[in-house]
Image (cartoon, rainbow, N blue to C red; front, side, top):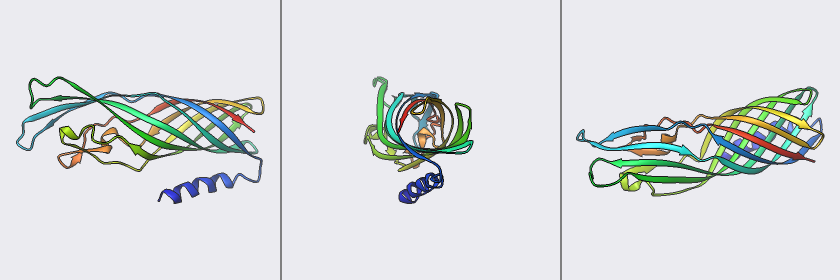
Length: 212
């Protein structure tokens, strides 16, 4: 499945090859828009077991490469970035009265592939497209002590909307809104069910690219 999606992404770019295909180096910084959420979890007997809260997702710097092509007033591009995700939970254990609030940081490595198509208006570029995030590594066992199991998703998807500005022939700056289709709780299970944390890992990402 992974190979099919990656091949499809590059086929999309290949269809723009009748105009000039350009390679670029792109740096980005994503500001987290994820909202904090807390839920109380219970035991099979109906007792309150713990309150778990998603507190924050850290801002994301990343670096990658880009292929872009213009054809008339339209453009298409695909990027491949390496990212390190990190988000923080708090856990209050009601079954151990003297236990203080605990804070747990979960991390993962991600290959981030945004694909964008859109229209050029002067020096402006307005675009939209799908996002594919492939997890290549994830911290393990951080929440296991609370009987929470990890359910790793190898692929997460979403969509983006973007605005870019051409500064001369080689420099491009822009901003993207990245919306994830996945919820934070989708990565974890408690008592055989998905963790009921509905926060979405959305980002506002600022980008700078140099094209050759």
